Amino acid sequence: MDVKVNIKRYDSDADAPASYWQEFSLAVPETATVLDALIQIREEMDGTLSLRCSCRSAICGSCAMRVNGHAVLACKTRASESLNTEGVITVEPAGNMPVVQDLVVDFDTFWDKIRAVEPYLQPQGPEPEGEYIASNESMLHLSSVTACIMCGACVSDCTVLEVDPTFLGPAALAKAYRFTADPRDGDAAGVSQRRLEQLGLPSGMWDCTRCYECVQVCPKGVAPMDRIMALREQAISLGLGDNNGARHAEAPRVMQPRQSRDTIRPLLPRLTYSMGGTLSSHSKPALPEESAGGRDVTTRGAPPPPGQHQRGGAPLASGFEIRCAESAKRTRMSARRMKAVVVAVR
Image (cartoon, rainbow, N blue to C red):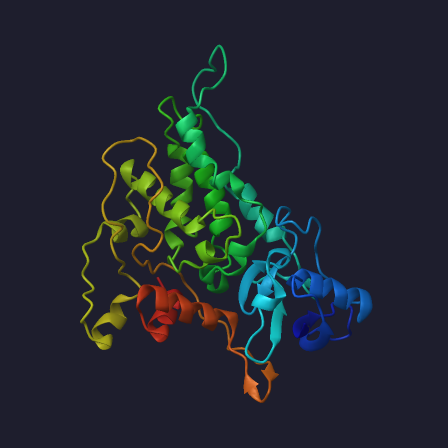
């Protein structure tokens, strides 16, 4: 099978480092993955191509990168299914992290945010004589959360991080939920109030815009956005509502579908759709079954400039614009309005 792979490259050792595109034409087996194609390019065509890979079994998460504008595990993505109408596969480094070389990015900020949520159990009160007991039901609920392989795909495509680098991000918040939903964490009733208070600060759980990108790209079905929504429900159930995010979630649905654009636009930075109710007890909330809940508008900043690279005489749309357009389809909003929601100043 003949394919063309268009790779966004970056040479940090150049006198004036800058990103550029380079296209490679090669023949690969029908069963080849995008990672197979990249390794073939490195081994047979250009030994300077830099990328990360290890297990080739979708377990280690090392080969996370953007293929055709979305984050994937290259070892899990078949080349034959990634070709566009011109027979080209577009490959870029993962987003929202500094590029080190070609397809290799710096994960320091990723791990800093994971550490920021204190990813370890913090039981309060006296230690039990025996073990800390957790029910089988609670552990089964957490099994999908603990399936996270820390590949960074959700962080790469998070539209909030594109405009607000201080946001904790979907990976760190999903990791935080793994502990707030654990009955061994927090007080004797399993309530992790201190954690939830910290997560409710600016750049925390209330800054998610529910664009659904992290759910779509996660290779392990962790559904980070759902975990963030569950964190919000936990916070509201504990009465931690003295912040803009919680007040927005409790607000009535004041934005009606038939309102004109001129009426809606002034409201975008400060209004949101309700989460559909709150919990009445202090128990750990179950994970919401629906991933496409209401829309939140709590980010700051300005959109990145449109893509400047050219191919075939036409400018390439930036990954930010592509993801806004696709998120708009899922939420029945216009692409322009979705972009306005994502970049609205709180």
